[in-house]
Every structure is written in structure tokens, then in C-alpha cells.
Image 1 (cartoon, rainbow, N blue to C red):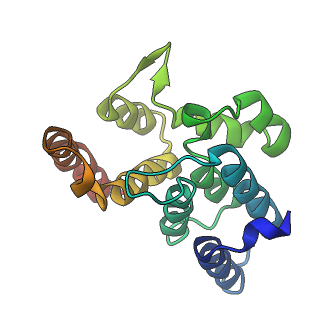
Image 2: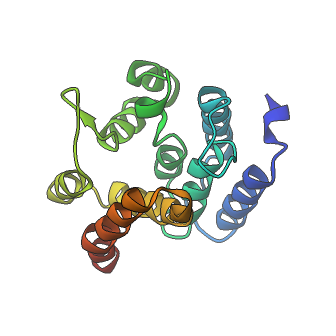
Length: 177
């Protein structure tokens, strides 16, 4: 299992979390984080982003950004695994067994597929806001911030839609948080 740790993105995240652990009272459980990293690499496998990078780098970058604002193990793990239920064969039931019900519920809350249809970002943000899920709103915000960094690769129409949605939904969310 240690071979999977040989990656610049992983080392960057683990180094940051280790530094945080030296400056806060409640420490982040790095063993649990490493297990989440193992799972994100295993289940996203050979998936690629539009940039050609391995897909698992995206949730690691999201977790890296989240770690600037949240020092909770469960939140970091949720950030790492945030796309697994929606985009891989990893199930909520398996996440419950490995990481516990809370993390599985949080990942499920971040999944845009509800009742076999995809909900809008606006609906998701509103639902998370109404349920006072600030940590999940933070993950959703940084998910978008990381995705917007590669928006130029998208076709023009898709790019315009993403930019408009970011301006209308995610910039106000950032101001709120």
C-alpha cells in the first residue's frame, strides 16, 4: 500500500497535513487520510481529466485547498473521495464499511445524481446551505475552483456555461463562506 504514496500531489497534501498537525490541538489522522488516498487512486484508476492528468489528482488538489480551512479528518477524507460515488464503482455501502457512515453520507450529499437525475449546482448549494453543511459547501467551492483552472480546454459553449454558473453560484458562495 505504501507504493501508492510516491506522487508529488500526494506528498504535497501529506506534508501540509503533517504541518497542520504540529500547529493544532486536534490532529488529523494521517493513516485514515492515506487509506482514502489509496481508495481514490484505486477507484479512479486510469480515468483522466481533460488535461490528460490522472483524475485522482483533482480530488487531491481539492483536499489540499480544503485543508487551508478545515482541520478535520472526516472533511479531508470527504474531499479526497468526493467524486467516487458519482464517477466510479465505489459504493456508499463500501465507504460505510471502510470509512464510516458520516463520511459516506457526506460523499453522498456531494453527489449530483439524486433520484436517477442530475441536479444543478444551484440546487446542490441550496440544499447544503439549508442543511447547514458548511464543510461540504467548502468542498463544493474548491471543487469548482480547481475545475475552473482548466476550463479553457472545454468547448466554447460548455466553457461559457461553466463561467456563468461560477459567477452566479460559486462567487456568492465564496463570499458567504
